[in-house]
Amino acid sequence: MAQLARQQRSAAVTLHQIPNTIKTDSYWMPFTANRQFKKAPRLFSSAEGMYYTSVDGRQVIDGSAGLWCVNAGHGRKQIAAAVERQLMTLDFAPSFQMGHPLAFDFAERLAEIAPDGLDRVFFTNSGSESVDTALKIALAYHRANGQASRTRLIGRERGYHGVGFGGTSVGGMVANRRAFTTLLPGVDHIRHTHDLARNAFAKDLPEHGAELADDLERLVALHGAETIAAVIVEPVPGSTAVLPPPKGYLQRLREICDKHGILLIFDEVITGFGRLGTPFAANFFGVTPDLMTTAKGITNGTVPCGAVFASRKVHDGMMTGPENQIELFHGYTYSAHPVACAAGIATLDIYKDEGLLTRGASLAEYWRDALHSLKGLPNVVDIRNCGLMGAVELAPRNGAVGARGYDMLVECFNNGLYLRTGGDSVAMSPPLIVEKSHIDQMVSILGDAIKKVA
Ligand code: PLP
Image (cartoon, rainbow, N blue to C red):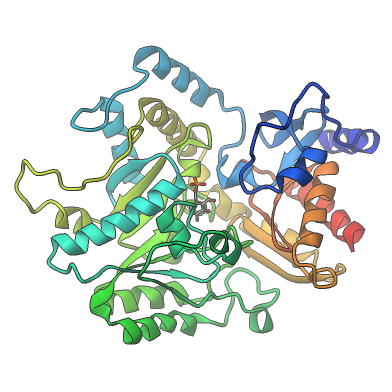
């Protein structure tokens, strides 16, 4: 509470002022309206635990775990020490035809917490690379198994799978695709599951919509199962502001994939590493995909790293040629980078010691009730939650989609809460060290902001 009072005091006296020594011309910022941002930049200078400090010295509570990645909270000394040690010992090791012990240790540690049988691990440097890797593995797997006709990749409307050509192609966020005229051919999308008419204000998983998984049957009928390599979905889409799947939906998708020999890929870049109160969303939903993409929380957001988890079926299916043949013509200079492995192992130690991969389960109900207490505030048209993910959707202002969402971002930041927005929804998912008092603080600032931007 002392922290809250301090934060409110400082917010009252200072709105973000940045030192005029910072020149903003050269940095072309990603996914940002650069010209708008640079008129009033929002800058952080340090972070500790649940809080950022802005350059003007204000405490800003982290409602989105950075970009859904700082699962163990900020400033973890154990990770910093491991990174420093590693840099002083082995700063780089080639990952093609050579290796280093930490890469194997890290993969084993990940395999220990992996969902059922998904215990073969391929390292990347980001979520986008994990997605493109998984899509390529799917294609290569079918080809290696005599089904080279399976080249079609299926995504879902409103899906976000990073920014590589593969991920952008299977992605379904309109603005992310529209700007680029050429994407992968042979890609199709099943329908999304967001249904305000039937499911608005559903708590946890929506009741209605499991049958939307049957849309995959439409694409099977249209293209032929023998042409489809894989379907990729986020178990809970995050970038489109937290869309929990209807009850039974993912189970049904798994069944249809099995029926037609289609690989199922879960993109767990956001949902991985404890965000739903289970190690992965696959555990939460009791549905095991054939491939699972991860990144973000794998190193607590400290060092770029990602991993694709593959089932034994997929992995072993690629190991059938002559022993001296490279099985997968794919990889990155920085795959299994020693510094990323050191950061990742230290991160997994923290997750284990502090029980963070399951801690969300004990807070999910409090989180849900706190968010849903905002029902009835002006313009709130939906509230969604799943594990420690949550979103509040607001009605667009006079048809200008995103304007109210942007005002929310600014208003919350000015009052000490950092969160993500997508269109007119605000999405939140705090570090997994969050306490109930932090949730109260976040929801209180959020509620005030909703009233203010009404
Ligand atoms: N997949 C999902 C589901 C994501 O949410 C993201 C990023 O937010 C990505 C892929 C891309 O990850 P990255 O930004 O690390 O490339």
